[in-house]
Image (cartoon, one colour):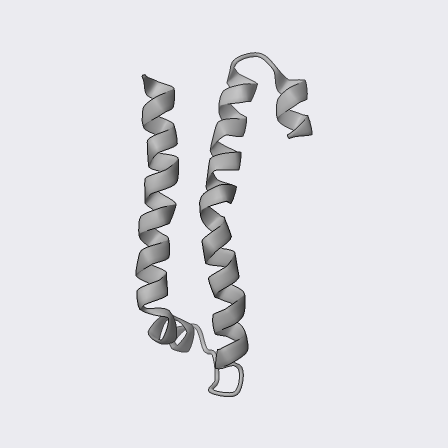
Amino acid sequence: MVAANAITLLVLLPLCLSIIYLTHTEPILTFFGASPEVMPYARDFTTIIILGSVFGSIGMGVNNFIRAEGNPIMAMST
């Protein structure tokens, strides 16, 4: 039950943050100092990173469960 709740949160939280980012890309990048010349490149780069964050979050979170189950070699290899 705990693992299912954790995996659900590992999917929902990055997904919600990704939606917030994708709807407010320009103001966020401007806040972090992206100039108008760099904005198209920054938008493309961060969009790819944000879309991959869901998978990265799942990988990091599930890795801790594998390690806690007593299989650190598999956790290290993944």
